[in-house]
Length: 155
Ligand code: ADP
Image (cartoon, rainbow, N blue to C red; front, top):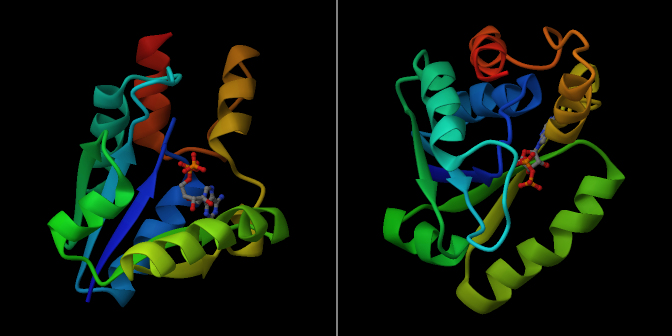
């Protein structure tokens, strides 16, 4: 089975990495897509986000990072995936994700598989990383070492 894990990954966190690691054990192949909204400026550029993902996914041979600025349903069709994969930290994530999963299935027959974040990483978010970065606070418990290096090099 082939899965597509889409997200902003702005930046990639240890929470995302846990989902990637678990998905790589569950699926034959996992595409991880940096989804870029052409009308919204992110914190990091698409290229930097993809570079971080590539550096951190190296150890998982069945994980393939990519970037896309189109519609998720088109990418899912192009890659011929069996399911879209989303991480769920808690009820708020599920409430936000449920209507998207319903629409993907109702409109285009695309299934969504949810992986529950473990308790130890449910507090991790890209927005927390961005907030702490602006105060120069330690980030080693939130992002992979390679992302930390790259963030330092950028600042
Ligand atoms: P969004 O796509 O909403 O901008 P992200 O790019 O940050 O969110 O995250 C991509 C996916 O990873 C989403 O399904 C999100 O719920 C999930 N995710 C984010 N942080 C974590 C975490 N700490 N543990 C598990 N899943 C997470």
